[in-house]
Image (cartoon, rainbow, N blue to C red):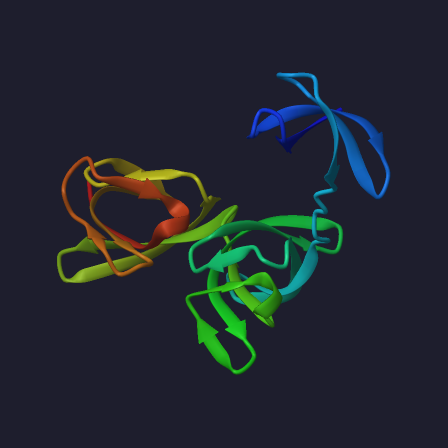
Length: 191
Protein backbone atom coordinates (compact mmCIF):
# COMPACT_ATOMS: atom_id res chain seq x y z
CA UNK A 1 0.00 0.00 0.00
CA UNK A 2 1.23 3.51 -0.78
CA UNK A 3 0.68 6.99 0.61
CA UNK A 4 1.97 10.47 -0.09
CA UNK A 5 4.41 11.82 2.53
CA UNK A 6 7.07 14.51 3.04
CA UNK A 7 10.49 12.90 2.48
CA UNK A 8 13.15 14.56 4.72
CA UNK A 9 15.94 13.58 2.32
CA UNK A 10 14.27 14.64 -0.97
CA UNK A 11 12.54 17.61 0.72
CA UNK A 12 9.34 17.02 -1.28
CA UNK A 13 5.92 15.35 -1.06
CA UNK A 14 6.40 11.99 -2.76
CA UNK A 15 4.72 8.62 -3.17
CA UNK A 16 5.98 6.34 -0.37
CA UNK A 17 5.49 2.64 0.41
CA UNK A 18 3.92 1.89 3.81
CA UNK A 19 6.10 -0.61 5.72
CA UNK A 20 4.33 -0.58 9.11
CA UNK A 21 1.03 0.85 10.30
CA UNK A 22 0.61 1.75 13.99
CA UNK A 23 0.18 5.10 15.81
CA UNK A 24 2.18 6.59 12.95
CA UNK A 25 3.33 5.18 9.62
CA UNK A 26 6.76 3.71 8.84
CA UNK A 27 7.32 4.46 5.13
CA UNK A 28 9.99 4.12 2.45
CA UNK A 29 10.45 6.93 -0.07
CA UNK A 30 9.70 5.77 -3.59
CA UNK A 31 12.43 8.00 -5.03
CA UNK A 32 15.47 7.80 -2.72
CA UNK A 33 14.61 4.75 -0.56
CA UNK A 34 14.89 6.57 2.81
CA UNK A 35 12.89 4.89 5.61
CA UNK A 36 11.20 7.29 8.07
CA UNK A 37 8.17 7.78 10.33
CA UNK A 38 5.33 10.07 9.30
CA UNK A 39 2.07 10.96 11.08
CA UNK A 40 -1.04 9.12 9.96
CA UNK A 41 -3.54 11.15 7.91
CA UNK A 42 -6.90 10.55 9.53
CA UNK A 43 -9.99 10.88 7.33
CA UNK A 44 -12.80 12.51 9.30
CA UNK A 45 -15.91 10.39 9.74
CA UNK A 46 -18.76 11.42 7.43
CA UNK A 47 -21.87 12.89 9.01
CA UNK A 48 -25.45 12.48 7.82
CA UNK A 49 -27.11 15.82 7.09
CA UNK A 50 -30.92 15.97 7.34
CA UNK A 51 -32.29 16.43 3.82
CA UNK A 52 -35.83 17.27 2.74
CA UNK A 53 -36.42 15.89 -0.76
CA UNK A 54 -39.23 17.48 -2.80
CA UNK A 55 -40.81 15.11 -5.34
CA UNK A 56 -43.49 16.87 -7.41
CA UNK A 57 -46.16 17.61 -4.80
CA UNK A 58 -44.78 15.51 -1.91
CA UNK A 59 -41.73 15.76 0.31
CA UNK A 60 -39.88 13.30 2.48
CA UNK A 61 -37.03 13.44 4.97
CA UNK A 62 -33.82 11.70 3.89
CA UNK A 63 -30.10 12.11 4.55
CA UNK A 64 -26.91 12.95 2.66
CA UNK A 65 -23.53 11.75 3.92
CA UNK A 66 -20.90 14.52 3.87
CA UNK A 67 -17.55 15.14 5.53
CA UNK A 68 -17.78 17.80 8.29
CA UNK A 69 -15.68 20.38 6.40
CA UNK A 70 -17.22 19.64 2.98
CA UNK A 71 -18.71 22.82 1.51
CA UNK A 72 -22.30 22.66 0.21
CA UNK A 73 -23.64 25.26 -2.22
CA UNK A 74 -27.00 25.94 -3.83
CA UNK A 75 -27.21 23.99 -7.09
CA UNK A 76 -24.86 21.17 -5.99
CA UNK A 77 -25.92 17.66 -6.96
CA UNK A 78 -25.77 14.82 -4.41
CA UNK A 79 -27.26 11.39 -3.74
CA UNK A 80 -29.73 11.28 -0.83
CA UNK A 81 -30.40 8.07 1.05
CA UNK A 82 -34.09 7.59 1.83
CA UNK A 83 -34.34 4.29 3.67
CA UNK A 84 -33.63 1.67 1.01
CA UNK A 85 -33.85 4.19 -1.87
CA UNK A 86 -31.10 6.41 -3.22
CA UNK A 87 -32.20 9.54 -5.10
CA UNK A 88 -30.26 12.06 -7.18
CA UNK A 89 -31.05 15.55 -5.83
CA UNK A 90 -30.14 19.20 -6.37
CA UNK A 91 -29.71 21.52 -3.37
CA UNK A 92 -32.25 24.37 -3.46
CA UNK A 93 -31.86 25.67 0.10
CA UNK A 94 -29.36 25.45 2.98
CA UNK A 95 -30.58 25.94 6.53
CA UNK A 96 -28.02 26.65 9.27
CA UNK A 97 -30.00 27.20 12.46
CA UNK A 98 -32.42 30.09 11.84
CA UNK A 99 -30.52 31.33 8.76
CA UNK A 100 -30.80 30.46 5.06
CA UNK A 101 -27.39 30.47 3.35
CA UNK A 102 -26.04 30.12 -0.19
CA UNK A 103 -23.15 27.92 0.97
CA UNK A 104 -21.96 26.39 4.25
CA UNK A 105 -19.74 23.59 5.58
CA UNK A 106 -21.66 20.39 6.36
CA UNK A 107 -20.99 20.62 10.12
CA UNK A 108 -22.93 23.94 10.30
CA UNK A 109 -25.97 22.74 8.32
CA UNK A 110 -29.18 21.83 10.17
CA UNK A 111 -31.13 20.87 7.01
CA UNK A 112 -30.73 20.76 3.25
CA UNK A 113 -33.73 21.49 1.03
CA UNK A 114 -33.50 19.62 -2.24
CA UNK A 115 -35.52 18.52 -5.25
CA UNK A 116 -35.41 15.21 -7.07
CA UNK A 117 -33.67 15.49 -10.45
CA UNK A 118 -33.61 11.88 -11.68
CA UNK A 119 -37.23 11.91 -12.82
CA UNK A 120 -38.99 15.23 -13.26
CA UNK A 121 -42.29 16.54 -14.55
CA UNK A 122 -41.87 18.99 -17.43
CA UNK A 123 -44.74 21.43 -17.98
CA UNK A 124 -45.63 22.64 -21.45
CA UNK A 125 -47.82 25.51 -22.64
CA UNK A 126 -48.92 25.08 -26.25
CA UNK A 127 -50.41 28.29 -27.68
CA UNK A 128 -53.13 27.83 -30.30
CA UNK A 129 -54.42 31.29 -31.19
CA UNK A 130 -56.16 32.71 -28.11
CA UNK A 131 -56.19 29.34 -26.38
CA UNK A 132 -53.33 27.86 -24.30
CA UNK A 133 -53.21 24.11 -23.74
CA UNK A 134 -51.35 23.09 -20.54
CA UNK A 135 -49.54 19.75 -20.78
CA UNK A 136 -47.26 17.71 -18.51
CA UNK A 137 -44.85 14.85 -19.12
CA UNK A 138 -42.84 12.76 -16.65
CA UNK A 139 -39.32 12.32 -18.06
CA UNK A 140 -35.78 11.49 -16.95
CA UNK A 141 -33.99 14.53 -15.51
CA UNK A 142 -31.24 14.37 -18.16
CA UNK A 143 -33.64 14.41 -21.14
CA UNK A 144 -32.62 17.22 -23.53
CA UNK A 145 -35.10 19.81 -24.84
CA UNK A 146 -34.20 22.17 -27.67
CA UNK A 147 -35.71 25.43 -28.92
CA UNK A 148 -37.07 24.85 -32.45
CA UNK A 149 -37.36 21.05 -32.05
CA UNK A 150 -40.65 19.17 -32.48
CA UNK A 151 -42.08 17.09 -29.60
CA UNK A 152 -45.24 15.09 -28.99
CA UNK A 153 -46.99 15.02 -25.62
CA UNK A 154 -50.22 13.03 -25.51
CA UNK A 155 -52.11 13.85 -28.72
CA UNK A 156 -50.35 17.23 -29.18
CA UNK A 157 -47.46 17.66 -31.60
CA UNK A 158 -45.75 21.04 -31.25
CA UNK A 159 -42.60 23.05 -31.99
CA UNK A 160 -40.75 24.61 -29.02
CA UNK A 161 -40.67 28.44 -29.17
CA UNK A 162 -38.87 29.08 -25.86
CA UNK A 163 -37.82 27.39 -22.63
CA UNK A 164 -38.14 29.06 -19.22
CA UNK A 165 -35.43 27.89 -16.77
CA UNK A 166 -35.70 27.38 -13.01
CA UNK A 167 -32.99 29.99 -12.40
CA UNK A 168 -35.10 32.65 -14.20
CA UNK A 169 -33.39 32.58 -17.59
CA UNK A 170 -35.18 32.04 -20.91
CA UNK A 171 -33.83 30.19 -23.95
CA UNK A 172 -35.22 31.73 -27.16
CA UNK A 173 -32.67 31.13 -29.92
CA UNK A 174 -33.24 28.14 -32.15
CA UNK A 175 -30.80 25.35 -31.31
CA UNK A 176 -30.34 26.34 -27.63
CA UNK A 177 -31.03 23.37 -25.39
CA UNK A 178 -31.04 22.23 -21.78
CA UNK A 179 -31.81 19.21 -19.61
CA UNK A 180 -35.31 18.62 -18.21
CA UNK A 181 -34.20 19.04 -14.57
CA UNK A 182 -33.40 22.75 -15.23
CA UNK A 183 -36.75 23.56 -16.93
CA UNK A 184 -39.63 25.44 -15.32
CA UNK A 185 -41.85 25.48 -18.45
CA UNK A 186 -41.61 24.85 -22.21
CA UNK A 187 -43.63 27.10 -24.54
CA UNK A 188 -44.60 26.04 -28.04
CA UNK A 189 -47.13 26.20 -30.84
CA UNK A 190 -48.99 23.27 -32.46
CA UNK A 191 -48.15 21.83 -35.86
